[in-house]
Length: 159
Image (cartoon, rainbow, N blue to C red; front, side):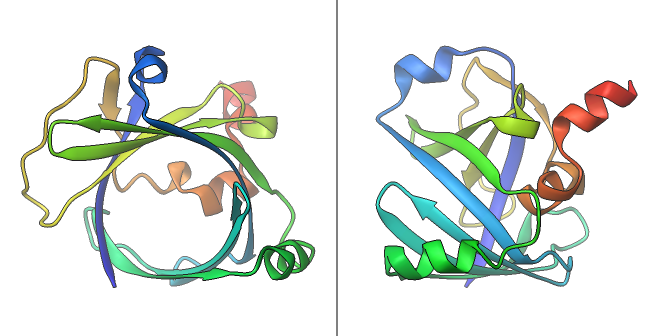
């Protein structure tokens, strides 16, 4: 129940032609407290409930518990979510021994594209594809729970 991942900005659309899978995801947050985020997600025709804990000091490791739930229950729970639903398309791209999940955001987060790679240890080596940009691991503004409250378009307007 421990998730170890690294997060990066994406600098080109090369991932799209390399993707093995693509799914639309809509998600909302029942709780965005950084110590215990509770998320409900619809991915394709499946529903999920996820609880995440606060990350470690460098942001690579945190508690994560996730269970599939019936689609109708996920839809009902989304109605209870805090304002600021996340709408994105996730591309799954195998690079060497790892799968990068690349999220292209829409709505108030349109223009943001982020890739994550899950690891088994914090220092595990992995191949970096050419479309991978700056690492943003541990930068909480890129967490989906924060993007729901302070969307990407708002930061771009403030620049």
